[in-house]
Length: 459
Image 1 (cartoon, helix red, strand yellow):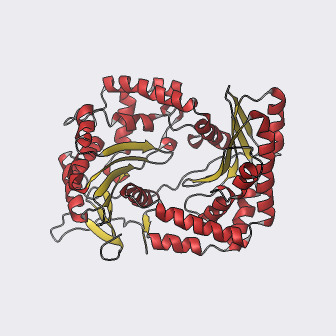
Image 2 (cartoon, helix red, strand yellow):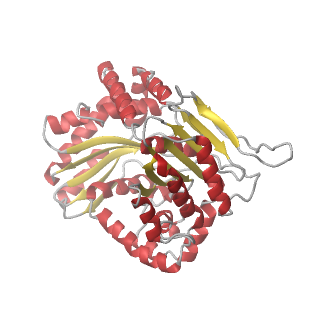
Image 3 (cartoon, helix red, strand yellow):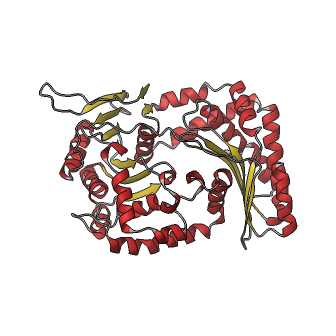
C-alpha cells in the first residue's frame, strides 16, 4: 500500500481552530508495521511505525536541508550546524545532552547529506519520552553561541583532515566534483578548510532560522511505540519552544531539484602518496523519483553488488587485481550517479579500468542474462528485508520517504516492485545508463605516463 502527498490547507474544528490531521498510511498485521502520519497545525509532520515485538525505539528529526542548499560562500554550513545543535540549549549544556542519553544506554547521533539532515536517538522503549524531549530541545532551542562556533570549527577541520586521509572515501567526493563541477552537488558536504574558516556564528544562525522551521521538518519514530503518545510529546515540546506559531502553515513539498550540469568524458587525478590507487568510473544515473530506479537497482546488484557480481568475479576472483570493487547508485531529486569503485596497486590501474570499461560496454550492448537478473532480484529483496530489522533502519526508511517522496511504501510493495522488474527493463536501463560516455576520478601515486593514459578509459 502506498500513500501520497499533502493537502494544501489544514482542517479546522467547528470553532474554526486548526487541528492535527492523522492518517494511517500503511495498515500492518495485528498492529505490526502500521505506519501513521499526523500533521500538526504549524506544518510539522510526524510519522511512526509500530513494532511491538521489540524493546527499543528510534526517534529522529529530518530537516529539509542539505549541502546542495548552500551558496559557494556557505560551503559546509549545513554540516557545521549539525555539530552546533549538540552544543547546548537554554535548558541543557552539551554535557547535559550527551549525559542524558548515556545514562540510559542510548545512542545519539546525526548525519548530513546533499539534500537532507537527520538527528536521531535510539533508546529502550521506556526511555522514549527522554529521547523525544532531548532531540526536540536540540532542534528548537539551540543557542549557536559564538564560543561554540569557534570551538567546533577545530573539530570540523579535523574531520575534513580525517576524510582527506582516507582516499577510499575522498575519491567519491572527487567523483561528485568530476561529474557536477563547482555546483552545490559537486562540492563536499563538509565544506573546505577555507569555507569553514570563513563561516561566522551570525551567518550560521541565519541559515538555521531559514531551514529549521516546522514546515521544513519531519519527525520519524519507529519501534515499540504508541503513535498518539509520540504526537502528544512532540507537540508539547514544539509548543513549549514556541515553534508552532502559524496554524495555517503547510509542509514544504518534496524537493523537485533544479537544472544540473553533468559532464562526460572528464578525468580528474589527485596525486597522493598512497599504497593503492583509488578510482571511480561512472556516468549520470537516475533521479530518485524515476520509476526505472527499480530496474537500475537490479542492474547495479548484478554488476557490482556482491561476491557473485560480474565486476567482483572478473576483477577480484579471476585475476586478483583488487580487494575491494563494487558498483553503486546515488539518486537525487533531479539527477543521479552510477559509479564503479576499485582500489588497486598503482601498476594495475589500467588493467582494472580496462576490465571495468569492457564489462560496462558488454552489458550496455548485450544486457544481462536471465539467470543474473533473477539472482540479483533475490539478493536485492533479501538485503532489503535484512537491512530493515532494527528500529533505526525503520526510522530512516519512513523519515526519508516522507521528506523525499511525500509517500510511504510498505515492505511488501517494495518486494513486489523488485520482483516485477523484467529482463527487458533491466536491459533497457543498461543501454540508457551504461551506454553513456563515462567520467573518471583517481586518487593515487600515478606516474606521468600512467596519468597520461587515463583518458583512454573514458574515450
